[in-house]
Length: 565
Image 1 (spheres, rainbow, N blue to C red):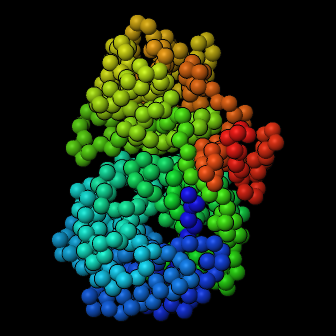
Image 2: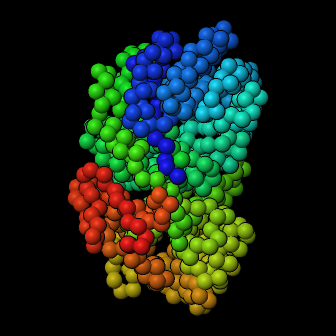
Image 3: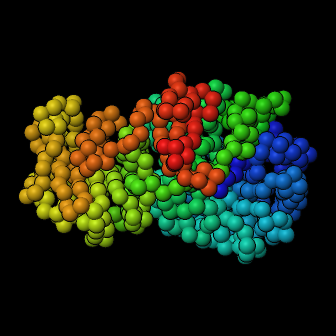
């Protein structure tokens, strides 16, 4: 599968393109997009333009735009109704955003907007996708958005579109919030839609990033793609850098786009095609939103433009199954027990992902019900361990698999059968001290809560303040390492790597890749042939393998066919 490259188009009028009648501008730009290898254009339609009195004119305008784009050879995504953009709730929505989801009259109004739009466009080419309001979940800013409201939104808006166009493709786009506990609950409710769009900008990351040059910055979006792909088909609907110069943006794109393809993104859309001249809301207080284009206001391309062209015409990349998997936490429901810790798993899972990546353990990102057949599972910060979870992991180990598990639920969440006789006898909170591996000092750590364990047949292989902080045993042909606390949520990557390296060595899970930490290895299918994709997250220097160079500047990625690895 070749990843489809696309772009969001606003024209110089920004989101007000419909009011300014910019179809001629779109047609000219569409021709240039196709010449650059782009296949998809995304168009935003403000909710105000879909009000009953304006709907007929809007349909004519949108239809002309769709016709112009398709005549040039582009598929079209219609993002409507747009109630939210650039941090603002847009009319006719209540400024609090509550009415978008909670008010029956507002829901009926949104349904009417989508029915009218779909009816007006249903005889267009099948290359048409409906996005149910980009980042719509942010529109309700006053209080937390419950999953029942999201489920209602998906069901009713999707039904509204398909009542007029039964074969329509429907998607929902949102940001990195998909990766949070709340976002995963929303993904569970997303059955009516066909695609999920995800985006994340390093400047506004839900996890700690130090700069655009930080390897975590170039690892984050592909990781989020992998998270969403565990629940749904996924595209990257927006990709750019805010607060970054052209060289930084170029280097970011060259690392992130191939990695997103390798993690399962079916398309990647750049944000956006051209710089915006409008000074009207929502740009009034956000001028930085007007200069993110692939081309400037004068039409000259930015340096990243050529990269988009290269990747559009490049190799066909698809994910290929690895032998190891990082297991994601299942979302808890809204009636979560007060006994549960209530910590969001995203940062901890991402830190675990980074530690495995820097150790060159090639791995997939999976839900627990998707782990059959993997040799090695990593379960960071397991909480609320159910009987089903316990049974799956016990079976995995007894069938000869390896398991690394840390416990995010503290002392009360430890199932004895899973741990095969390892028992919790006490707990320690706010524990700080020297972390030792055998007799070697690995550093100082602070542990919010550690379960004190004991059991026959187990070896304690690390300690904090002389209390066992890592356990190991062999079960049949499999191995288990248990960390009775949650280091992924409490220590940095360098310290976590020390823990993981010890665990990996005990289980014999050593990488065969002799590479610097900043080079990521992903299992891919390259033009239908098994291969590995190498991503250099440190753009200051190149790295060499026998007969292979992993570039620094320039592409920042290379491929190695499996037969050559």
